Length: 164
Image 1: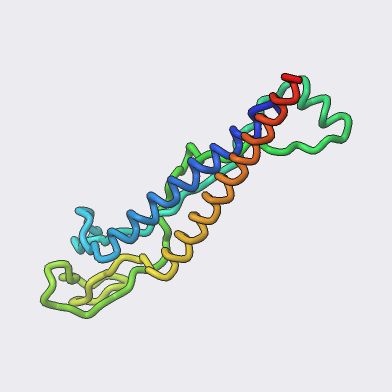
Image 2: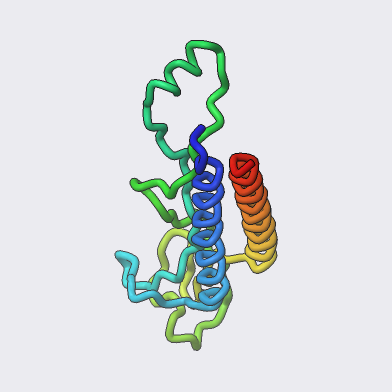
C-alpha cells in the first residue's frame, strides 16, 4: 500500500457515507409526498419511493507490487468503496402504505391491483428505518474520520523520524 493509500480509502468511505446521509435526508423530507408527477397506466398518482445508495468496492489498479504481494501470499487490504456506476441510487420496491381518504386529490379514481378506489398511496418511507440508517451512517462517518486522523498522525510521525 502506498503512503497515502489508507487516507484514500478513508476518504472514499467519507464520501460514501455523506451520500448515504443525503439520501436519508431526502427520504425523510419526502415522507408525506404522495404525488411525484408520475402516473400509473390507470391514471392514479405514484408516490415517492425510498432511495438507498448502492456501494461496490473500488477496482484495484494492478501494479507490480500488487501482483508480487498476491504471489507471496500477502493479503489485499482493499481500495475503498465507490457508488456503483450502474445503479448508484436505487429505489426500494417495498409496498406503499394505503390510507383511505376518498376526498384527497391523490386518491385512486380507478381501481387497480393493490389499490382500491378511494385509497391514497403513501410513500414507503419508515421514519424508524431512516433514523437507524442515519445513526449507522453517522457512526461509519465518525469511524472513517478516526481512521483518517490516525493515518495522518502515523504519516506525520514517520516524517519526523526521517528528520532525525
